[in-house]
Every structure is written in C-alpha cells, then in structure tokens.
Length: 240
Image (cartoon, rainbow, N blue to C red; front, side, top):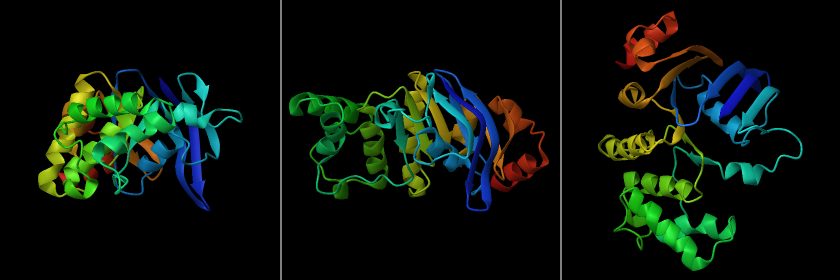
C-alpha cells in the first residue's frame, strides 16, 4: 500500500501540502479532484520522489521513499507515472519507446524487451502501430503509448497526473477507456483528474483538495452527490 503521513511540502514561502494523511490500499482507485494549484500533482511527485518533502513521511510497500539510502530507481519501478504530456522519444518507434526502459533499467535482452513492449502496446490498443513514430500518432494514441511505456516495467501502482488534460476533447475518451480497463484489471491507481465522470464511475474513493489540504474524502456517491465541504459544493457546481 501507499501511506502518506502528515505530509508537508513548500515551494519557498508557499506551502502547497499542509499535513496530508492518506492510505491507498492495493487494488484501490483513488481520484484526486480540486482546483488547479490545490496540491494534487505535487502529491504525486512526492510519492515517486520527483519532489522532496519538508515534513512527514511517504511509504510505498513499507519502504520510506524519502529516507537516506532508499534506492529510488528501484522504487520507481513499482510506480508507473503518466504525465499530462507524453514525452516520447521522437526518433524511436512506438515499439522502441516502450522497450527502452526494460532494456536499460531491467537489463532485458533486445528481443525480450520488444516482446514486452509489443504485449503492452497491444494491451492499450496500439498493436497495429508498433513501427509508427510518435509524430505519426494522434494525441490520444501518444498518451496510450505513454501508458504502455509505464506498464512495461510491470508496476504495482499507476500514478496519473491529469493524463487527458492536454488532449482534444474527442480524444479524451480513448485514454479514459484504457484507464477504466486497468482499474477493472485490479491495478492500484491514484488519478489526478478533472474528468468527473471517471472519478464518479471508476474510483473506489474520491479525495477533494483545496489550498494544500485534503478537505473531504469518501466513496464517489457521497463526495460527489452529497458533498459536505462548502468549497467542494461550489467546485462541483462550477464544473457540473
């Protein structure tokens, strides 16, 4: 499981995470919602140590992420991360992009790494695009490529940072469908999202962030249909 205990993070004088406590169990899907700047993305970056922390503790499967001596590269193999931008290598084909980490990080042979890559690309619906370059793919296909690249390391957890926000509206659905598929397969996921239908339909719990505080958390039907926090009520009314 992933456990956050009294997590604090500041950028200069701005405190962006103010004592967050959250536990995500294996197989659970937790969606983080809230206005931009409320600390949701920073939370993900603290989990996979892309950001340092100023107080508290982040534990992944019993390992203290920010402790001295923690093998961050080994830990990150458990934490597949998909960002807003897909950041593929433009000079590599889809197959080569996805095979890269298994070859470099896990030391698989070229043949074995490409077998893994082909499997994961097929898994996300890109089995017919193995030899296409990123520039030959749509935005939605490039984001699915990014998901396949994360899955190639066989992570225990997937972290999604607004994975659909950079996409044209007509391409959002194909990426959400892949995320729904992963959830149905039992993948543990923390999802920063503005897609309220996804949060409502797929999540086990929804967490509302405001100004660095986890203000409300619970089952989707409770948080989204009967919100208690006045700011959450306003937030849902503005996006609904």
